[in-house]
Image (cartoon, rainbow, N blue to C red; front, top):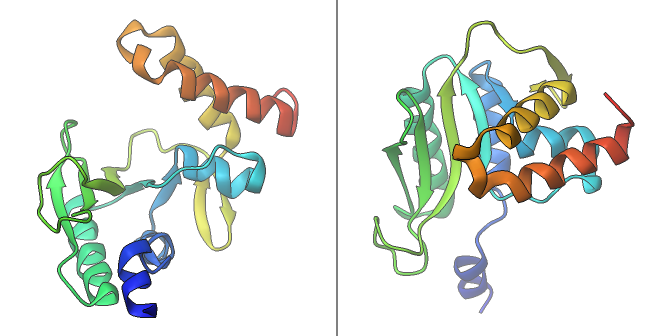
Length: 167
């Protein structure tokens, strides 16, 4: 019974394994995960990890192998994202077939941008500052191409303002 529940709901170690690989490869956590690390329970919940790493494809493949080993089966796969140089790790979902509608993104790995964003160390991880998160969210709110993100980005900005005042 316990193994069936573990397979149904996952092991819970997925995020920990992804973050440990980001730490090991001198990566920088950004996005909603960075907000979570800064603000804790005050941040919007997220299921995936976004990170800047020196070699995105290699780190994605290493992380995928570790996740598969942790799960004891070939549950995850790596695929290129829409943006050049970005790689995604996806969970195959309940059906165990890649490329179907129930696949969920576990992590996105992108190359480190130039100039490198300002960071803070939290739990041994390099995490972008909240001011950088707020700045990128504000920029996407002004861009009509990202209309599909506007509700999430506005919620993030409101939470940052509530948590830390005006940054």
